[in-house]
Image 1 (cartoon, rainbow, N blue to C red):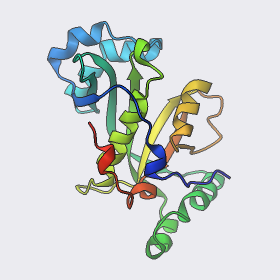
Image 2: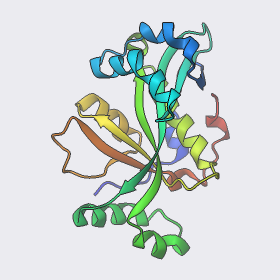
Image 3: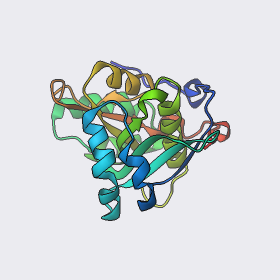
Image 4: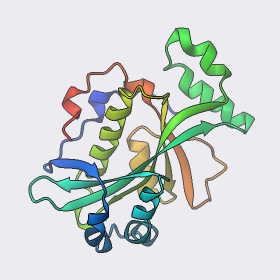
Length: 210
């Protein structure tokens, strides 16, 4: 069983790149048209679909810029989600993995839940020439820091549907995400989750650099 023991301090990864994050807008279409992360499926979404999906509130989309030169170096999306546990084995594993990190007074309620409110990182694409420089990690920490303090509605987990390849899966796993099920091991994407409660009491002020 994977131990959920990563702290916010342990997540810090220094990068020479200072980034800013802003909402994607229609006027960004020219930049998006030439954006490439090297994955055809993601590139097609970024170039042709992301602004349409944003326009009709299917998701919220964001761009990441290099502060030094203003260039777009990554894009990502967020959407409301839930961790829903239908398979009894998955539910047992999920509860065992998560309950030990939940406040004692809440555990009895937590264990009775069958659905857990979450936010989904639906797409995270870093420009091909800017990969392996800590940008993806900074985006994850930005999302985590945002939803640690988010109190407009319930949110207990961050979820992703990772492209099912060794590099992408390793990236999310190294950042604390755990596979929700083994039933998608041979599917195009793998469902993963991160328990926000793990980091809620940590000092995150130094992380909010975006």
